[in-house]
Length: 318
Image 1 (tube, rainbow, N blue to C red):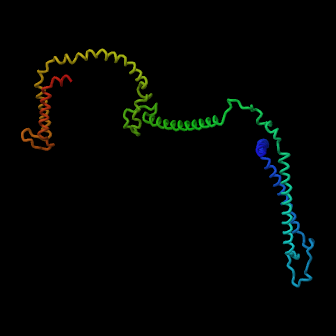
Image 2 (tube, rainbow, N blue to C red):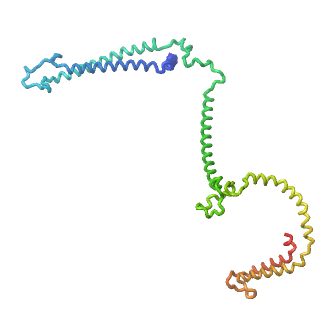
Image 3 (cartoon, rainbow, N blue to C red):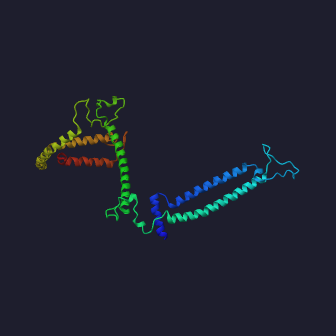
């Protein structure tokens, strides 16, 4: 019974866009507000009525003292105000109890007989916004898993979009830095950058073409020309390799003995001059004003001179 009532309440809530119980609560609250206004009006009317008109007798004849009076000179009856407030409070309590009792019956009757749908009819009710739906749903209808996958895909797409925007901004900043190195495309190239008030602000400006200066070839044209010359260079290298292989054998047959003594004397003189410039005398080996050279370094230099003199043929071949 509770399950069927929950399904009926869900159906009525979807149809009315509010729960049936909220409608009954609004009705009860409206009646209570009317009761409160009526009780307040009764209280104000009784307080504004003279106490003598409400049956409160003047006991001045039995009282020796002078009774209190208000600003208009009317006799004040403090017990009348207290009795009126007490009676109004009792009336309000009685009305609230009566309204609660009667509207509890009204709520039960309304939910059972007015705001309800028969149990055997509820499964066949189709609301207006369900008119275009096909029941049961086809196999191609989206499921919770497919909707969740689409939501994740959308989140990842947005994340990738933000990453691409960040990369685009970084590449734009990098391109602006590179353009500052090359300079504006139509800026004339100065012959002396030091004469410019900004100095050499574009150190790679020679790469970009300059319309105001002498006609220059773009970098792409130069690259295409270089690539077009590569086959000719390969053919020339292939033609020279056999000739280069025959050069060592022909050079080994040359006579290097005629200039050997001249080379040895020249190298010996150069070594001795270097030794003297470093502060080592030829005989005493004392330091004059340069770095002191040890005897082992002198002997090593003499050995190098001797090796160069005896291996002159290998030196000339290199």
